[in-house]
Length: 495
Image 1 (cartoon, rainbow, N blue to C red):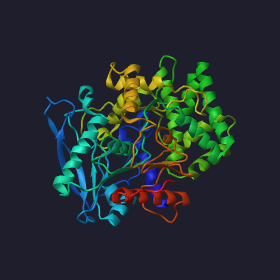
Image 2: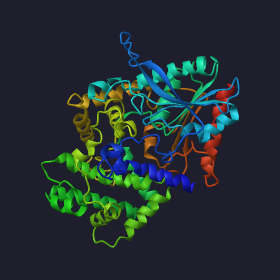
Image 3: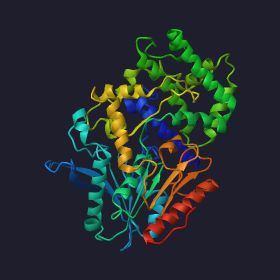
Image 4: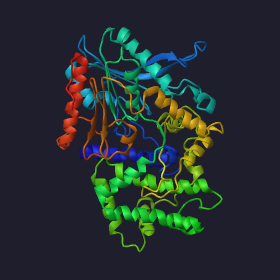
C-alpha cells in the first residue's frame, strides 16, 4: 500500500505542477472543484495488454436533423473471456482514457475469475474524443451527461452484437468519481441493457453550494488531528479576514508572497487567495490517501513556535512553496488554465480542465464554498465567486439562474438522494467529504451502499493488499458478492 500511497500523492499533486498549467506549481481554482477519476493511476503507466479501438456515434443524439458523427476511443482486453461470459466496462469519466483500469484492480480480478471481456471508453470531450473542432463556448453545447449516456449505450449495443458476438451477454459497469455516477445513471436509465453498476465515490447529487465539504474537512482535522490544530487553522483564517476588513492588504500580501498584491478593488483575487489557502490544506489532508496525513499535518502546525496562528499558516506555506518567487493566488492566474480552446492543448486533452469546469457550471455545481462560518476556513469563499468564475471563462450568459437550473435538472433526471434504482453499489470513505454528494445509506433490491470506516479515500477498486483495513476487506467482499449476483441473476443478502 506504500507504493499506492506514493503514486496517489504524486497524482494529486500533478494538478499543482508547472507542466499542467504552463506557469507554476500551486493549487488552481478548478483543480479541486471536482477531482478527475484518474488521480489514482500511477504516473506514466503504459498499457501492454489491451487493444486500442474507436467507435463512431452521433455528435448530437437529441437532434434528429443533425446527422454529424464523431469517434471516441475505447480499449478492449479479452485475455480472460470465456464464451458466454459477461462484459465488464470501466465507464469513462472526466479524464483521458487509460487502460490501467482494465488491466489492474478489483474489477479486473473479478473479470479474470468470471471469464469477462473487459472494456473502457473515453467520455466525449475528454482525451482525444472530441465531437467538435475546438472548445470555444458555442462548441461546448454537446457536452452533457445525457449525450454521454447515449454514447455509452450505443457503444454497449455494438459491443454485444459485433465485438463480443453475444447479444445476450450480461453487462456490468464500474466507475470512479464522475465515471461512477455515469455508470449508476446508465443502470438507472437502461436497466434492460445494464445488469449492474458499481460506483466508487460516485457523485450523484448535484449541489450548487457544497459548503459541507469544508465543514467536514474541519471535523476531520478534529477527529484525525487535534482540536488545537483546528483552532490554529480557524484563528489563522479569521486573522487574515480581519486584516482584509482593516484594509491591511499589504501585510497579507507580504506574509504569503502573493504575485499580485491583494487590494480592495479586486475582491475576486481576495476570494481566490482564501480559496488557494483552503485548497492547499485539502491537498495536504487527502493527497496520500492516508488518515495519517492529517495527523502529520497537525503535528507540524502545532509544533510551529510562531507567535500567531496566521504566522503558523504563512510558515506552513513557505515550507511547501518557498522555492517559488511568489504565489499566484490571483483570479486571472487561476482561471487561465480554463481558457485554452484547442482540443489538443494539454490542459484539455490530458487534464480536462475546461471541460470539467463547463460541466460544473451547467450541470453539477459542487462549488466548494466556505461562507457559513461552520468550517475553520473562514467565510470569504462564496458561491457567487464560482458563478463569477463560470462567467469569466464561458461568458455572461452563465448566471445564477443557469447554474441553479442545471443543478435542479440533474437532480430531477436522476433522483439525487432518492434514485430508486436496483442492482447498484455505492462505495465511499468515512472521511471523504465527497460522500455528501453520493449515497451512503441505501438498501434496495440487489442494491446497497457502503462506507469504508476510518478511510479518507475510497480504495475499494484497488487489488487486495496485506495492509488493507478489515473494513476495506469487508467492503471488497460485498462488492464481489454483488457483482457475481448480478451475473448469476440470483438474490443477494443485505448488509
